[in-house]
Length: 485
Image (tube, helix red, strand yellow):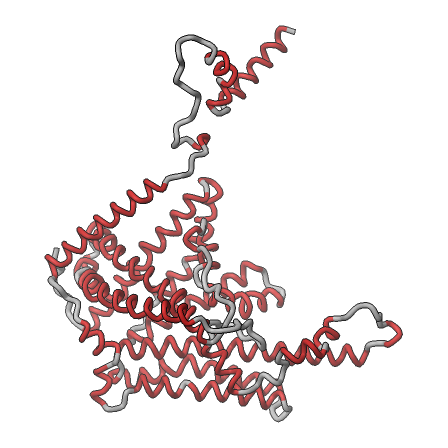
């Protein structure tokens, strides 16, 4: 009996050691209140202890914001003292309009932008020919593949012939536009292919269906699609094969084609005005920061990077990380919130979920699933799922998705620079192993540390790639100058 009592007492002490302070002395508290010494102390844990369940850190957030603001003002003053006032809106106009392209009186970027309509119309004609049985389906699919590959290779091919006639902004715009058209035409052709196969299966099922086996009180999927009330509102294949439908899809803020997009009832004028003002102010802010802060930081890192001094490279990397990350955040907001919402409102496109809470991502995989939903949904719908449906594993499908993404990241950098490197490609292909590491850290150390890895990769990875590309570009086009301190 004594041994059992000692074991119970030991277990009780252990239970007390992991309890909250309030629970440990609750009984004593009631007794102390009856004493004459006027007690003022009450049991409780320190606010920074997890057991306190305190979660209102608004003051600390304000303190952090104030410290960041003071640090930003100091960096701004240091920048002005070192480089002077470099912001010149006239240079923005020259750069953005591709003034040097006018020297040849050809404006090749404008010509390529206008010419982009041609492969779009060709894709529609091919789909129309397949739908009315003028073109055999296998031949039509081959023609679609050739047309889509033509879209992605045309800018690179033209640049090899007339590279000196292009401005950097002009060819970058062309590459981005043609890449978007490539992804959209891929989705357009594949979705129409699904619709044709669905109609074939439906017709086959209607032919083989036995009336004696039909049930009067339920409807199949085909019966629902044949419902006259629903059919009156929805577009069916091949009625969607027209210019109006295709051009709406090209302008819509999505990469995935559907025959019937969700639509809003009206256009909100105040919403449109807000987005337009955001774009005007945001674009000017980005250009000013780029001209005043980003360009000097990048140019002054060339000589340091050439000498391969680890300490100096780290210092330049950290110095470049701040303006680069600020510009990236501005780019994200202007693109995924202001611009895509503006296009969605003007087109009455109802699906406005262009991003999720990527800033709370606890590992790299979650970040890539949430920060750019239009691209993520396209990759899942048109690459990941088709590969898994062919019998391949999810891991293999995921690697293919990252490979495709890595290729397009490299395409958007190497083609405009006319300098083929693999830094962006390698950076993207490094994401799967980094995702494994971040997931391991999340499981072992907690979600907070996984989120820190995500932010670290965003803050440090991009400026490192920029330094490497600019270093190679500077060595090719001009002799780097000594970096100023």
